[in-house]
Length: 440
Image 1: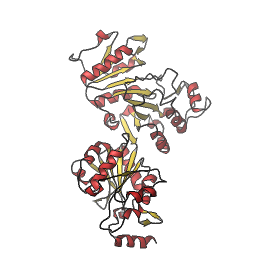
Image 2: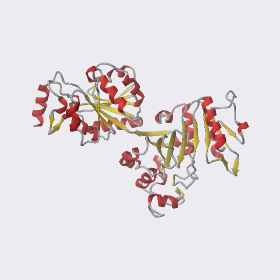
Image 3: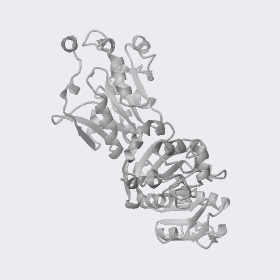
Image 4: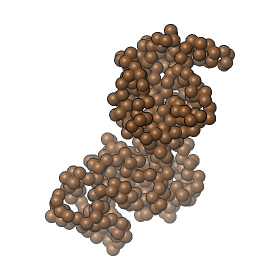
């Protein structure tokens, strides 16, 4: 998986890498994945052996050492540092030169990647008072941690600044390190989140998962981590492998229709003791979708009170009569910028299990394709997951087709499902009475 695409970076990204367990390796891989000219630098120190990984190393003592916009340089991965400060380390180029590098990146229209932390090549660390030195102009911060220290004792063999980590997580030196300890440190404002600019996108990259076979234990912590980070990656950077990338996935329940053919509000039909809309919203919540947005229309005043005790956001679509596409557009416009995708659910399909939506989410974590959908007996079914890369296209659809038209213009990935009940919808009173008779 290409890191640049997975992390949703752009050609003008200004990213800082902090933490421990593979920052330089990650920075080089990101630069290579761009495939274009990239400026690299540091606000701390780099080991001499790491300089061999780039195409050209340029030592900058003053502004005159910087290249001009049109100057020809060897290679695409260009590292700018200050001079040698120890027998095996170079320092950063200084704040004034760093600003000039920002200007150079803008002239060249290329990314700027900054290693902004030190960990003495240990997998885990706790920051000192002066760390990490992240410039205010940074728009993306990638926080790294290595799992080779999990299951090991908290000491200076595995943890950089173990005494600070001990205080941060409130455990004594010598304690065996667990996933819980790492999550506590990584979600702390004095740990993994320290000094990150308020508007920067935050990505947690958990590296060295090959050294900890039980790395999927972090699945139990995903929701907690995603409350603090925009994305979580699981990688073996030495093998250039990103196995999974998790983001917040929103749920959009389309419940705006007037049910003219049905004769009454389908949203408020009794379904096993609760209104149908509440049942479908409950499915989205159980599946871990966050946030959950409910698009109302014809029966807004009756539907909204039904949802008041649930962690959802009812949004009224004043143009609901223009077809389902208007509700899709309303849902997309209501989504926060930090969601990676959205699952669209129809209010009249009550047999969608939370497990199916969880399967769609897991598929998205390993395949960030534009569209992911369930397939039953070779037929496309609902609900459909749309990656944020197609959100703009969803805004442009018209009529009552929903997102179906995008299948013709975007790659899609099918998730096999063997329960054809998910295809059942309630179109007529006869449908409802037959289904109700079954569960009664």
